[in-house]
Image (cartoon, rainbow, N blue to C red; front, side, top):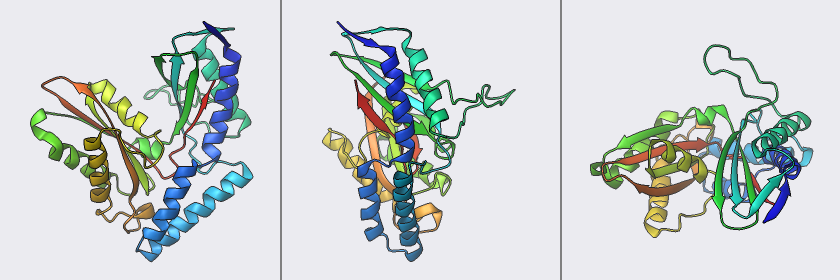
Length: 281
């Protein structure tokens, strides 16, 4: 059994909160550069050039690429041979978020009650923590700040199996059409298929932290990712909703087995920043 002091968890979470908001993943930057060459609309091309300039300036200055530094979504993959010492794991993650948002001068976006008293918690806690127990002696931490504009464009549908592949494609493309410019395109589209009502939305969110442009290992789902990207980029929404070819940079699908009577589908959208960063302890 390997012992890990939770102070190490807090330290890493703090660092990831700051870095994820200030540094675009390298693959995202490369994809936006490629999209700039592919965009046919002059306005769309200019928007993409400004987006690139913004990201490079943010990285150089150590400042957030977007004013919305989001809710702190944390994925923890905990090795089953790890024993935490020095305190509670959840408390350590929240301490890392609190320190990261405070010392990184990141906007705190969380309110304490969703309906009756929308008072800012002041430190962007509690984090939204998803924990998975995996084999091994390591802890893999992914911090994925989630902005409100893109999150509000999420949707879930409990389709019947008769809807099939065409039904899934219609739901995903229609949801991106309805989202329009709201999630600050070009976007990354996370799609969950299968599982249950609760699991399918988590699948869609997990899909957003895959390396941009990576494919599902199942060839059928990989082909569907490519088909959906083509269909979405035919919508004409374009960069920042000003028209053009590049509405989405990537579509990522994650799937799970499901009930014989169900076909759950969820869409979770990120803007072109798609902030996330991972560390392994």
